[in-house]
Length: 294
Ligand SMILES: Cc1ncc(C[n+]2csc(CCOP(=O)(O)OP(=O)(O)O)c2C)c(N)n1
Ligand code: SF4
Ligand SMILES: [Mg+2]
Image (cartoon, rainbow, N blue to C red; front, side):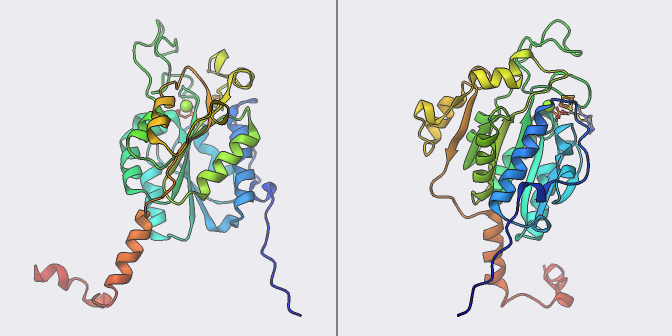
């Protein structure tokens, strides 16, 4: 009798690098990276098949704390870099991470395009409503009225709503979690990774140094409401947009929207087109002729 070869299995510790995080003690990002280790072990892809891209910020240090290939890149530019990686090597599992500032101020213009291209990426934003790394300035998700070093009398601006933002642009998987519920967060991230297409996870990740009292883990634990407990239908974009309007007032956790019929991803469409055109493709050496003729 022959036995089938056993596939390697991974534990959370297999995704933990030797680098020691330099986050402030108690920072929410510690919980987020733990949830990512757990999600990756459940997904079961080996570290060398994973590319993890981030921008700049406290949260963007995350790739270095994993054993995946990591790129702590340029402020606000994680998504374009990740899309290039996925296009060049579609077999890689590509994760993207960063902060609310990285993703929704300097990088905000890249988000709609990543969504409409719908490459198979998972984008995790650690939303602490502040610029943590640069010592506590207003971020795009800071609530109106917040007093910071750059808004001594209180912010006059409305906050960006990251959930509504990505839902409005057509993201097919949108979720929110908090490290106050580690098991729930790991589960959400695993589902996002498994979703075939662009998936977005907003993590309410407390900044213990510059964040507000009501944005800390203890308050999250007391106030969070799972979407399952409110009977939310995650197959309806409209229902998701309705609930997402409570961002900043109610901490809903779970999957807001999951398109039950995922459209073909752009990396998939590119592959299809390449295969269809392989017969008529010019040999590499004569590729310039196509431009010269025109
Ligand atoms: C082009 C550019 N502009 C500004 C900065 C300074 N900078 C570094 S991180 C950051 C914001 C970080 O906030 P966020 O993305 O929310 O991450 P957090 O530190 O809160 O996790 C800024 C403004 C930079 N590094 N590069
Ligand atoms: S400044 Fe805030 S976000 Fe940055 S490591 Fe410290 S607690 Fe975390
Ligand atoms: Mg931030």
